[in-house]
Image (cartoon, rainbow, N blue to C red; front, side, top):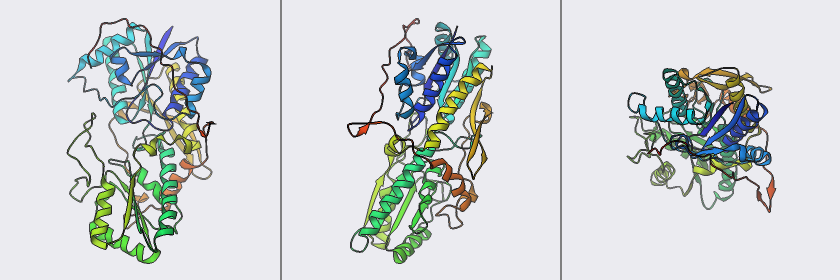
Length: 414
């Protein structure tokens, strides 16, 4: 009986556990073909260190509850495995662990870097003569994966940012006559402005200025736009992507440090923008950083996002059982209105390390808003509510037992 391995990678989302639920529930329905589904404790590190969570020890009820629980139920990590040429030892260790536990199905739930790891595992398993069917399950709040119409996690973040932009704008509007006239909301998005674009979904009567990573920051043009909004509406809301850059390509908020994936560490662009406005125009301001709140807000998840996250986990298992390898199930949009979609797929070689940035026809001519085409794309992704059950006034989320499988190999240092 072949076993399976599932791992969560990178920044978690409000719906990544729905994909986990899709994988595990679907695998259990095919118990004649898939034995145990092991989950990596803290992502791919769990495979390298042979810390394998035996999901068969988790109850049917708890696995089902993953669908409405945010974050990574089995733990995630920011750990980028180097190239095969640079560090073949790690990949060989993965194969050794998989062989020791009779794991022939590898489901990796993450973004572009995870797709790259999945591709390399598939290639190495072939050269080492131990068959592994590697299936990548898309996940990223940044919505920057190619092939798929959108990435699970994004729709819920977009809903949270759209709602937060609207509610904060109502607050500022009510105080603007004698107090705050500027509110700045910093959102995630290093190279792609998809999350920031969600701020444009509010009613056109709300003056919102969006700063995208795709558009070089023009200070004078920006200040003129803000000043005009304040004079016309009495206030202005700014949604700024953490990856907003100066025209020369430097991040406004770069801290000269890097994360474990080698990406520039960003943060703090909201106060930079707020102070710039204060110094140039004199307007009183408040700012906030959505940070973890935007990706953890399962209480406000998009119904379509939850449904798609589960469907992609389910599809990954079905693809593996069909004998497919080195692929990623993807959302294929078939209609905007009404919104309809189906499951397709893409080859990992066409997905790994490729970022899908905002389409230029989705950004307004002045560079500070979204077009109608962008609104048509975004709107279906935030629609529908999928509230979790509540207990004592709080969401009733599940915590996995995380019972470990016995180790069979010598220790391995990561």
